[in-house]
Length: 318
Image (cartoon, rainbow, N blue to C red):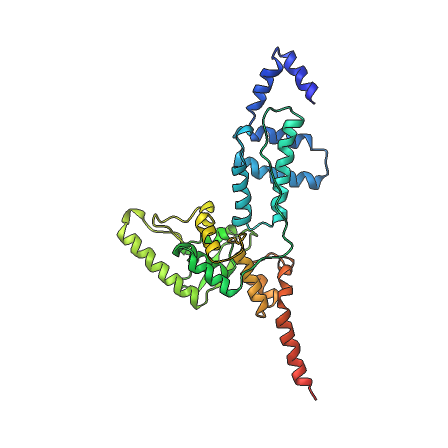
């Protein structure tokens, strides 16, 4: 392929150096297009995955010159995939693998003159991390009031980062006892209906009063649409939820360094299973797409199963 491009540059009267300079200005979108076309002979399934994954990255970095793509950009994408969308490390590694292959293709096959950022794959944890109740409380105590409310809400409902962050008052019933989120707002395109317990009902009433107070003091804000709002009336950005403030709280609470907002969803599921909630019930509560999605948590119900077994032993004792 290199020789072909050099032939083109000579035919056009351009020197190899000027051709390289021109290639250096390629955008991410242009390189992605050439890369995908070069791999079109692969199997249908692999092509579909490549087009979907790289397509998402094209939407993110489309017009950016490829030599301006930095490690920080890749890290932010990685964090959003994990924190906001709740993707597993293995799935995130799929994105990173395709990105690395595409950038290397640009250097090795197209002779582009740039140094791709080093992309390190994530360590794929086989064990699902979750917090014990005392750890949850330590985390809440070390967070600022807004993030503390968001974290408490997440661990009580199992809702994902993005759904908590952008939760709107119109999804909350007037008596604060129920949430109904339409399918269009959910990751798996299924509507979500969650009854709220006493703890969250009290939180919703308090936050609603805070909303009314802020609207009264600052009329220019208009009506505040979001449940978890800042002083400006808007929600935290994706990047701001688990920023330095979050990481400092995790450290001060003595929790594992990798504790993320999505850890709270794992915690919700794990604590439910340990206390006897059936898998089919948990699937509906957490809006998982299938029972396979929560198979990772079922081993945590061993103690509950032992309690159930002991019930029968008590009845059958001579």
